[in-house]
Amino acid sequence: MDDPTDNAVDLHFIGNATVLLRYGDLTLLTDPNFLHRGQYAYLGYGLFSRRLTQPALDIGDLPRLDAVVLSHLHGDHWDRRTRRHLDHAVPVLTTPHAARRLRTLHGFRRTAGLRTWQGHTLRRGTVQVRVTALPGRHAGHPLLRGMLPPVMGSMLEFGPAGGLPRLRLYISGDTLVYDGLDEIARRFPAADLAVLHLGGTRLPGGFVVTMDGAQGAELARRLDPRLILPVHYHDYTVMRSPLDAFLAEVEAAGLGERLVHCRHGQRTRIAAAPGAVPRVSSPTRPRPPDEPL
Image 1: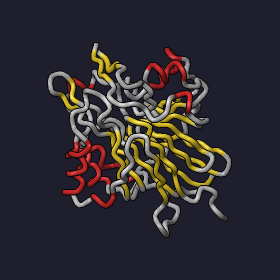
Image 2: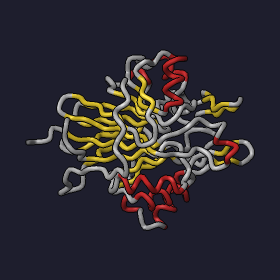
Image 3: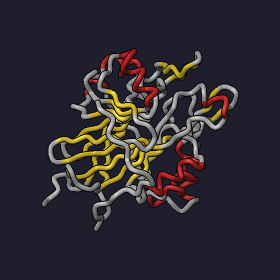
């Protein structure tokens, strides 16, 4: 049977970690951040950061959404414009911590809190996507781990409804590199695209809480995706590691040919590798059931 999606995901990089994804009739949005240039995102504990870039779309320009995939509840990933103006009926797939707050404080009732390795499947017409929560660690210092919100990575597996996945997109979330991420490649080998949150975000006291160029290249080396897309850089004053640092590290690691050159506001299409066949995951334990919405 012919695949109506042509085995490809259309991607629009709106800015920061906000990406619009389309696969057939399915449309997803990641980490919605629609603050304008010069506005301030609240990062907790009295800390604010000023936005340096303009989002490529305003929230009112979004198409119909099947779901939002939210890595964590921070002001540069879920801001006050999103809280006020996003359709509250849109499902949100996120961490249990963020799901509780979005339900009880902000009225987003169709919110699923996914534990690590738990997934949820969304279907629209003849296609589906399974979103699986993956490990992430926002801070290296133990003191900060209790202060920053829990974060998740995500594996998005796109394919025909009821069938095996044809495309895998990994989204890192605001994680640092640590050994717990190695399990991702064992369970989900050969991702088609890794979307990496970079920026080398630096908090007062010198604490780095997102990957800089070297860490981003190291994670790409460990996970070995077919393609690599950097996001989450140059957008806020707390981001201290420029995109050029990541590009240099990726070239030095011999991964330069895998880079997807899609900057703020640009669009690209990620197609399955020529000759690719449907794939199954390799879980080391049974998959938990879907979290109801």
